[in-house]
Figure 1: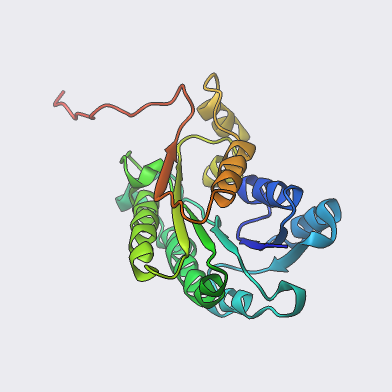
Figure 2: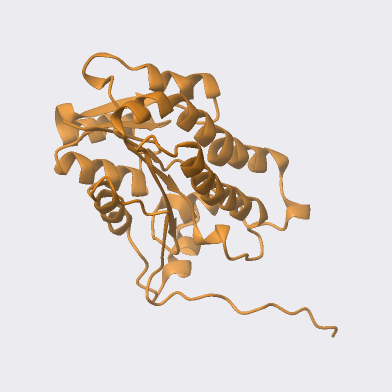
Length: 247
């Protein structure tokens, strides 16, 4: 039985991926900070789900995930899903604490975990899936730091493939557009009305859509590597150029 490690498994894409992979016969190690949600997911998924409370901002905690033993010692797939965005403020109006949390989670924690897990992934000729975003390719106002972290994730994925040349390890960057999860709710400080307004009438992607995409990538033959997959709802498109006119 193959084993997958999924960060940010307490909600959204991470939780949906845990359900999809366990349903497909995998063992899943799910991490997050909200222990009660991890326990509920374990109650739902059973013995093939191992819940581990880990804060991605704390490198010492992150690195312990590569040192599991016994039935959970192997690792065939790493899904770096944990991530968040600061409030959509112009950089000059932002709070440093919010930005540091995003940088520590989206960049530092992801790199630390990937580095720590590589020996096991190389031994298994496994797969790394990194959750980036269309925000890493297409700028919008208020997304300077979040978009930059996701551009980092995309480029890190491409560069990692070079480092792993000849090892058999595959690396894929998944780059979603609008998906209705807790992501926007958290970004808006719990404002459900703002989250609902953003997705109204769009028929956004779901966490399950993205989980099924990730599982599909994991199930492809070992000689196939998908460098990146960018996907959007049909009703989402690219923004036009902005102008600032004198009044």
